[in-house]
Image 1 (cartoon, helix red, strand yellow):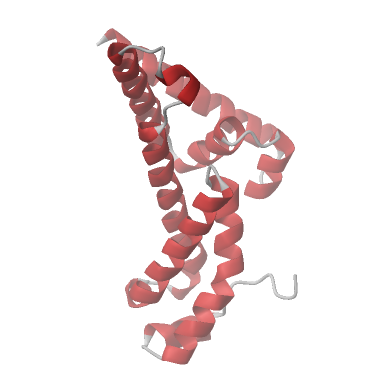
Image 2 (image 1 turned 90 degrees about the vertical axis):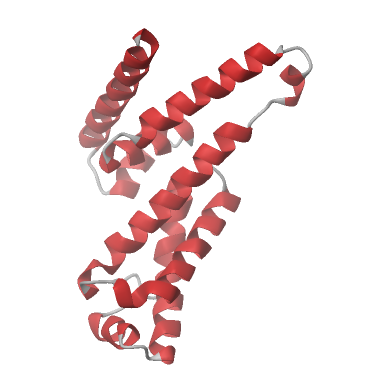
Length: 179
């Protein structure tokens, strides 16, 4: 990696002022960071690419809306996270294994979709730090050490967040089932 830093505040300020060259440099300079984060959160490489592209389009269109130039990284990560979650929800809604499709009844299909929606809603309701760990570990299947390293956590902190996230999802699903 030649340059691992986010674009500087002067470049961001120039882009916010409408300088087309600065916007182009800002978008291209942000791409590796946005892409890396998207790959760590999205369910597939295709979704990661799409989420990264969507985030860069939003950056291009709405750079003037960014309040603090030092907040670019967190703003972009939030956009990518939301796009990955949106894609996950869409995938869970439209998922139908071909082998089971012919043997399942319509009622089974409806129940499975409702359950997937409940799980997606419970995951979406988690605080962002717990949601990231849960998606990377349990949905995407990344090893714990990799999740911890990617998110800049110790293994113990990652395990603690994962436990809290799993407990919260379980409680949410139990609460929904009783009501």
